[in-house]
Length: 320
Image 1 (cartoon, rainbow, N blue to C red):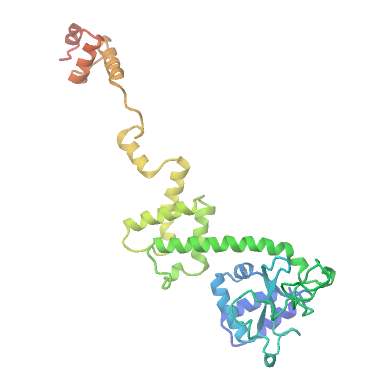
Image 2 (cartoon, one colour):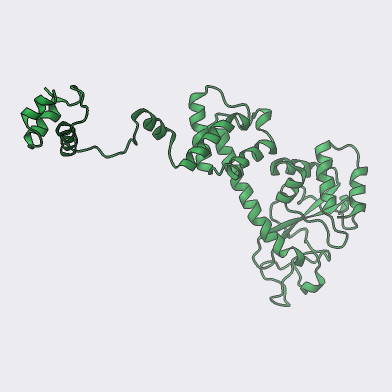
């Protein structure tokens, strides 16, 4: 971090509180020698806000000419890398009269040709050949040891790419959950906005062990039984806890109800008539207590047909 940069951020006036928080965390990530290049995922986590909200504040800072964004590409794969942020007090901050920020003031568009990334201003770097790249002819080449900005970032950028992909996947899942619950994504209630409800939903997966599919299924069942959407994710906690206990037991709620009513599993095999006749024949031929109405006419006839009992024994045991 740079104490000079964070002090500079604190001195700025006329910003909304959340926008100033974003500026302060950008300055906290600034390195006086290498520059400032946090990924959006990391910066959003620092500021405790969503990536979409973060981009709104970054645009506000750029319009206020407190930051300038520079898009970077991998010189070999041409894939996007972490954006570099030039802060307002740095020497490289573009002069408004030069028109440098016309192409870079909007959202990231992957176009680096007008505003190269490294400190030298010479563009992307490659060690394949001493000649300029045929695909990026305007860029020049130099050795990696003279480029302190890009080399330390190679591994962290790969890690952040995976984190960004996971974050995008979770946002898709969260949007699906909102849709299943019958909420309007353009007019969400306050208890479904921002990062707190998202962290609460994440805990259903990390603490309760529920999958995204199971959470969607529980939310859909809850919506069928409740006419109005839930007031925030906390209202679904009990349903999610029941689903987690059911998953641990390896059964579904419907099968549990069938077992309580029937006293045996719903999918238990039915006994054959031979087995039933043999069981009651043992009671008839034995000396134990046998209620007179314990054996139906069908079972009695089956025992007689199979020769398991005699009519005299049935009469002695008071079986009609």
